Length: 390
Image 1 (spheres, rainbow, N blue to C red):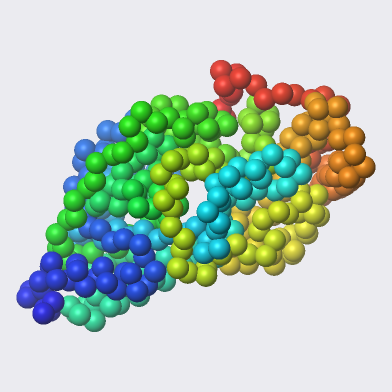
Image 2 (tube, rainbow, N blue to C red):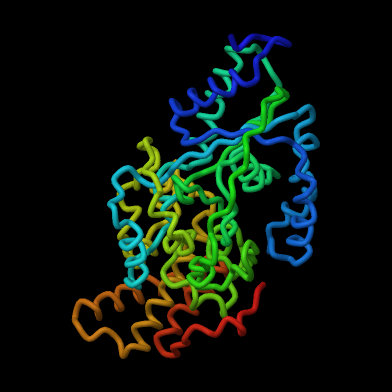
């Protein structure tokens, strides 16, 4: 019996919770304690270096991230859960196919995780269902569910609870699942036995560090978010520094490069859920077509998607950067000679021109004008030493 109230059998409850988690689509369930004091120095150093960029909320919450019992009073243990998101229909050579998208400058590339339904909604709903099942077995208990939505040290909790180890790109890696998964937590006032962490298995591999186009992984396990394409295209709400733009290529929402080259992702598992299947139009879209979306069309196409959170203005900003990079690449190569290539360039320029006169956004106007300027003044990507971070 699992028991109720003070008669709860923690081990049996954890075993049953793992069964329920599998039924709800989670790949693994773990438990972490609440003493994360050993992680505080690293967090403070990361913040003091300014690596969080304009994500001021990171600094505002301070050490509360490393103190679960302060964030949610009464918390004595944290359930951690991971959920695979690689689409069900992903072919065996999915990494090769994804890398090939980066060689088609006219095509917009969206990070794999963002091509389906908003993961915040999926994980939060299923974690709530898990909590409900636990409550049905033991009675009401204090809890709070998190999915990348509050000051929580998700990766730290995940690594401590055996979900995997911290890769050199700072993401969690799992021997059976690579890194293509989401993380979620349930802070709870029930004491459950912590699950054992696992040893790291990156060895001497530095593929992720070498693959980052922005050199954002400044050292193993140390990420400068200000250089990260995911940060620049999603979290950063201002102009993108001109020295960084050429390095972004055609990535318009997020970046998967460090994961695409990781050897462990040959073990990435397909999700059992249809929620993370790529929506129609989420891949293979032309930059010129996306630049023509009105705000109403943007909202319609991104309903229920994590992409909606950046809004139409930043969407156009990101597209303009990608368009400028495509024009610069073609210009540097002597321009596409085939009629199809010339048509692509002409359609991209035509889609950019209206945004140089955007009625309300200086951000969009400036990026669109920069993009068009690349046709006349190609600028090769600067060396990493020349990168200036905002």
